[in-house]
Length: 346
Picture 1 (cartoon, helix red, strand yellow):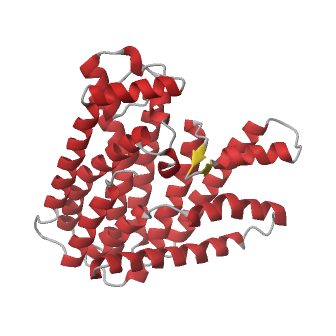
Picture 2: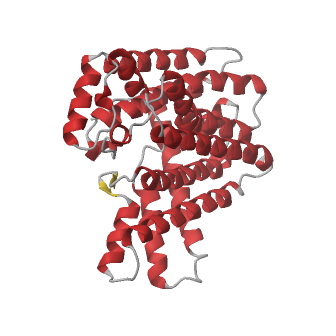
């Protein structure tokens, strides 16, 4: 392991340690609930936050801070933890909206909570209970994110402005995604807009700007970070789309929801444009998924997606050399994060 990778790993360890401490602190504030309900929060929210994920967004917060001249990693930890808690909230809600059965190789929170409702013999609709409690847990994570950010210090105002904007844009992107899935098949332009706001800016640009704000960075560095972030964010979302269709669900945590729900993605938009086939509409079962995968490969949509991911990633990395430049360690870390965030699923 080289020095830079070691430093990146140390930054992740700092985030995970502070996340664990923060979550225990927040659990201690739930004394008005009985022990069983506190344990439910621990199992379905705290353990969910601590149990997995690449911690990409906290990493971008950290290296946005370092790129902007920040020299005290502890100073940016609250913002990094806040970003991870918002991401946990987004995943819980995304699974409810997508009716996803699994996440990270395990039943989604709303599915597991529904099963718990049935097993305990409670009154009412189990599915409704599971979705409602998962939504409340997401709101709790959202609230804990604000609590984490409050520890930012003298640049809290600037950090909160960035943090609010990235959350608003993510919500808007998610709405566009839902609206597109509910309507007729959308074209490439719409797919690009959804990709930008649902994931690209939220995953890369927003976290980088958050770290930059905590460091009190200059406008020129912020523009450099955006020049890196926007193409990389698009590449990240495109890789996520490809992994969602062709990756192993046990590894990706996805089960072809994009195909089953007719989401507006580059793969589907490209395949529709090239083939004009109705095969990609109204997919309801594994047979339809398999046929859609074959069509996406045969018409060249998958190859086009891979070429676009590579070109966008190269564009992002090249942007790191623009004036005013960033510290070498930050450049190397952001180059590594570009590769990590666009890597193929196993």
